[in-house]
Image (cartoon, rainbow, N blue to C red):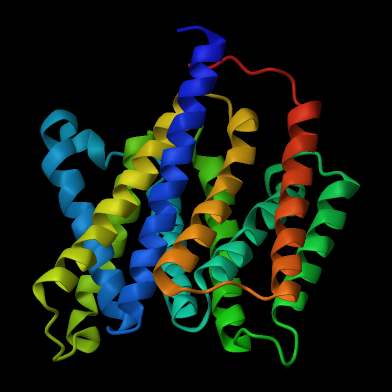
Length: 295
């Protein structure tokens, strides 16, 4: 397949992935209004893990969990568990658009920390972009604003977990199978939340439709990560990175259609600052990085 065809295929896969992630977030927000967050987190990882065992174990066997870095795989999985938990708590208190925007602080933090943690060259733009992004968060969480400060703190904690998760992903990716990395996140999340089940289960009995939506959390989570892996397999990350921000568009549309919410003017400005800061870093990296051959 030629480079242009690879790029187009990767971009389409990325756009589908971020739509799936936005749909999962909207589903989680809808359910979080009625059910305890720990129950939703448990269902999300259990379904994800079972699906991988059903569809991938017959072809992969033990390779599904074989790794040379088990400690790092487990630590990375706990970071994703933290992302999910903090983000759903944030969804209880924040509009979908705002919570998604705050999550996009993570790429800015990754760009800044890539120097001391990964030994990558870090320019002044990363630090300046992070300041702009933080200014956007301050504008969103301004006193007297429309959003909850506690919700912003939850979303911010999720963004910090996401930052560590991305850094660990970069460290593992050259040495570990993508499928193994995906399975470890599902397995650790499922085992951890199942072990806590006696303390997190409640007497709430979901109806048939809500049970379907709860199961869809795991389906959408697994599908989104699979599409993301496939996108990065055929197209360089520097080409795909700008299209991650399409999730903001999907989140805004779903927020309006499902929750009938439209952020006010200052909140839109804050969201815009975060997105522009992230895109500035992505575009700079794209312009200054030599071409990479796709697999």
